[in-house]
Image (cartoon, rainbow, N blue to C red):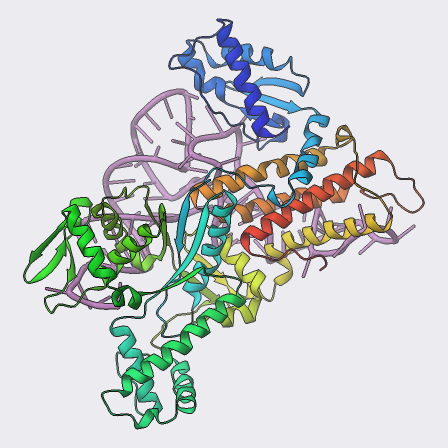
Length: 552
RNA sequence: GCGCCCGUAGCUCAGCUGGAUAGAGCGUCGGACUUCUAAUCCGUUGGUCGCAGGUUCGAAUCCUGCCGGGCGCGCCA
């Protein structure tokens, strides 16, 4: 019996009480109800606080209400104990055979176990990283690469149709500074004060000079552009290959330039104008974002006729919506949180619902600890830590997992030593090891010729078998919650808890027959549980983009 | 000054969108492998949940104020 099924039984019991006239709840009965898992095992397998919530509305004290409900639930064979505790909690215990059936349903679902249709039919665009193609991806981008990709996977598991998108900021004066920096480097001249100073600029300039014959001989008017374009092409490829190696694949690489080349900006302006939130002032074109909670209005077209970056943002949003995305998710760094209101305002000015069609997730910045000291990261000083370096230090799995473990709205301090030197104590290995152990048992069972056909779920009656089964049964609602709240870190935390439940089970329950023992029903039952557990780890790790090793 | 985020064990952080005695990892100290992987398990150590009010059966969680930290407030991108 899954927690969802148990909750359904409680709802039915409530309905029966209401039909009998035993209770009358003001405002009606709840349509949904969720059972909780008590922290203290003495409080049962599951608990519900429904009596406390409804007691007052039914005109009786919660314990009285709980008594009525408990009497009904005791009639159910699948529920072995119903106790009332404290102010009106109802604590429940589930029969072993009802609970053991969860293992079979997990095996039946296989890779689909954990998926749902809660976001079915919803077209969601997830945009993340969106860096300038002017240098390597750094630590901040890396956090988004891991979390954004995991979020996309989680949303897809909830039934959404997800597109991962990378917005290439290939327009504007950052690009020009990039070109000028490369040119200066190629000629052995000092990099402009406001240019790019990383060491990679020198290497990249050298590479371009070698690969583009005569570039240093071009006229002054053409040279910075030639360097800019050559650098752009190479840096973009570099970012793409790094992300691919990091297992973060984008469906769409969207160039900001393309928006202007195809007059996406003009198109968007026309569309926004129809909604009546644009106006002219001081020879510039403005959007009245203050109609929708922004601090000040924003300029779309400057006095000199050039569109602003904000105009690109607006056009890009309109473009996404016209491509059919119902929800556009933006993942931004904390240094961009000032953009939340204006981005929301764009949606509102376009006639959309800013609470539904656009969502902005803010990720706090990552600090990095090396040798017990915080590294001061500065693009200027060239002390940035790149994705490539991080992967080299810790490996893709450890890095992805570590970055996915935490909610994005809390600041994160990444201890390089923790992630690398103490690799064996890293939570990622704790979880992966569980999977490897499970795979090993299944291999051994296969060698012994034990088949997973029928089993008696009632034999899974050990306390730790029950704990493990209940943990496995949580998976679908963990995935659904992670999708709903856009919080993929819940998957990681869940896997850690479940790994703990498994390791404890493994410690006290022998799965396979030893030596010359016969194959008993209990072996088959436990082997079924093992197989179901492996399925959950494989599915869960996949949602994080972390590998599930067969051996370690 | 205004706005957003954050203050939980020595350190890094969870806390299931209000529940029962606040948890995990690392760190400390000590146990458990002739049998399915010891990258594991068991025990030990550790907290005025920043402070003060409020909301209610019940608050780390929600509201208000204060203190402390991070970030942002361009016709830059």
